[in-house]
Each structure stands twice: as C-alpha cells, then as structure tokens.
Length: 125
Image (cartoon, rainbow, N blue to C red; front, top):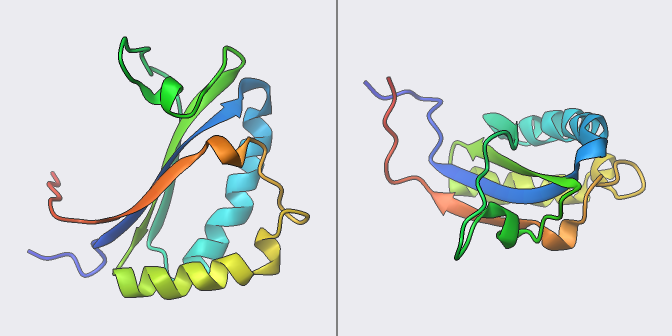
C-alpha cells in the first residue's frame, strides 16, 4: 500500500549546538517548523544527541567540529517531492519569520552540514 503522504524528498542536517542553549534551540525549532509546513513540508524532525560516539577516523562530532560544551543535533525535513521542496524552500528563505534578526540560529551555522536527498528506500513497520 502506498502512503500518499509518504515523502519522496528529504532535507537533512547535522549541527553542533551549545549544550546550555538546548531550550533556545527548541524555541528556534518551534518557530521554524510551522513555516516549513506552511510551504509544503510534511514533517520536521529534530533530534538532540544522546548516544553519539566519538570515532577514530570520522564521526558526527568531527563533521561539525563540535567541542566539549556542544551537543550534536540531527534533523530532517520531509517533503512530498523535490518540486514542492524547491518551491517551498525558496519561500522559506524569503519569509520574514526566518530572518536572522527575527529568529537567530542558536548555533554556529557555518559548521552545520546539510543536503537534499531523493528517497530510494523506505521500510516502515
């Protein structure tokens, strides 16, 4: 059975957030999420690092240059299609609610990694 609301496109990101700014990060998410939904996103997920091991060669901490006072966060936005994502993301970037003065990121955005991904496998229970 095909779920009509199943996403076909995902925007994903990893960032490091000052651990002391967890509530500020959550407040930031609560402002951003409805904007993305308004412009077509199906779901917005944000995860606060809880079991993020340090690797020898590479890991999430190294990827975002997290320091001891920061927590790695993982998030994604599910979209019904790349076309909806492209149109929606353009509107999000122009929305005054997303302007740095209105909703500043409580982390160093220069160390965030992100990308768009076409879904090619989705196994659900």
